Length: 196
Ligand code: FES
Image 1: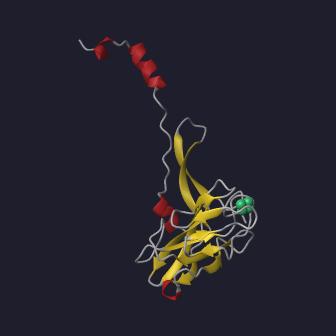
Image 2 (image 1 turned 90 degrees about the horizontal axis):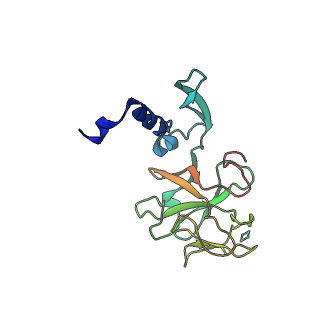
Image 3 (image 1 turned 45 degrees about the horizontal axis):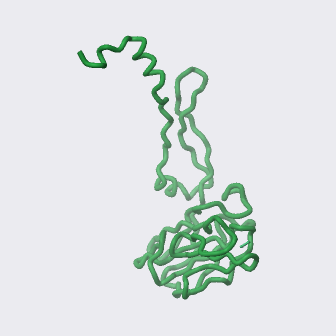
């Protein structure tokens, strides 16, 4: 007789009680999330206990990023940033898209070298506009406390006072058109990227 068959019903039921409760699954993949970006809000289904003891799917409204045309690939010149505002025209939304000339994390285009970043230093909000360096593919040094960010590696900090990477603007290429479709990382000065 194996060990399982020695267990009493009581022991089996206690084991069942210890097993982890099933968590509700996220109903949307990252790709699906990005594909909904044409609207400002979208309805998704989430699992909720509605007081009946059973989980039910109920609709929830979540904010999503706009899909915004920010540049034409054919008009980009290597190491010459093009400025834009995203995800809105509010405070801390300024950023830039640049063709680095070397492959980069999150880069789009045939050479995977076109990336975009928010311009606001994650330390205390110093403005990084005009600080792009083509020789090191970096933004900085920040005019306040000298933080510098590596644009080939998702805006990771190279040096300085900041401890968070620079928010990277997610891009999609549609023919020759470059669209901003999201932001990876929290923009300085916002509690939510979509709440300017
Ligand atoms: S605000 Fe940029 S390093 Fe402090």
